[in-house]
Amino acid sequence: MESQIAIKCPSCHSEKFFKDGLRVLSDGCKAQRFLCRSCGFRFSNGQVLNVENTNVKDSQICAILQDKAKNLEPSTEIKTVAGVKESSLLEYAWKLKKRGLGDNTITVRCSVLAGLIGKGADLKNPESVETVLAVEPEYNDKEKPSKKYIAVCSYKSYCKTLKIFWEPIKTNYQPKEAFIATPDELKLYVNAAGHRLGTYLLATHDTGARRGEVCHIKWSDLNTANCTISINQPEKGSRPRTIKVPEATIARIQSLNRKYQPYIFCPHPKTYTDQFKNLRLKICRENPGEADRLSLIHIHTFRYGFAHRLIKQLRPQKEVQQKLGHKSSNSTDKYTNTVVFNDLDWETARASTVEEAEKLASQGYTKYDEIGGVHLYRRIKA
Image (cartoon, rainbow, N blue to C red; front, top):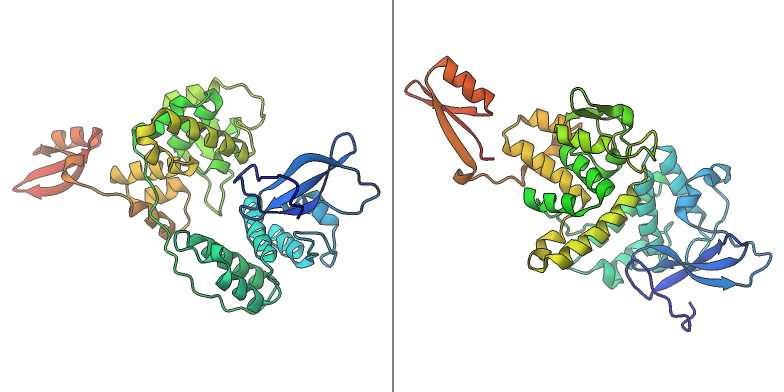
């Protein structure tokens, strides 16, 4: 590392980094590429180097996992981080790719493992990895126990894939309950965003789809007659599904130009993730009194809000599971735990005849008790 170069990571502003190969510019010149030791972000500082006839290859995992990886042998040594030549990391990434894991999952795991290498761990030696996890402060921060947990999970996957025996160490980590934003808070984000980003958030809000699933909705998945949107490219092994949405949502989607044919939105989720981060900063600045809550909202919060609405409407769990695309009810349970009911949430009504019962049912009421021949109905307040 050259201390005289004032370099900061554009993502987390850390000054700790590794040299990570060279980037070839459009004019044929080469610029130094860096890997942030804190967040794993790769970047170039724009400094053009006078390098001729170099054989150093760009070690970016994302590039390896694309077309170039098909032509590399598992035994080929490549430059990774801190000058370490590590072929097993490429072998691990390519095996995950062949097994059908998503590019984002592979990139995150490889970034975590690269961080362990940067701390001096030998991935082929579990004892070395355990030592790093035990002594490095960033893996023992009680305020952020998830960092060690993610590192253990990533290395566990690495050992399982490459058939290395390792008994995973225990971590004191319990995931927090999901943050549930109010309808007004979600609406604030939709209204404050630009037309395309706002439409993207509205589609996420009304379908409960993941960010990548929304990005891969095609124009052919839109049914204007029935006001439905089909999720035909689900993520994380979920099931395809069709969700009915408000007519206004369909109309707003149709107002978009078709620059991303055959997709409605840009098929790269990171595009909207970056735009959403900028939007969140803007909203928090404009609403300082509510910034603590508004800063906790991210794109996946819209999916939690969708599930929360279904559960509070007393929809059967099977229906909630189907609309979220979950194959297992265990995945749906974590959404159920966030719902808290109280007496103020309900409005009640009575029915003593079949006609009255049918009328209440058509208005969204659900029967919950019967006393002395009188049927008691209730529904969530609008």
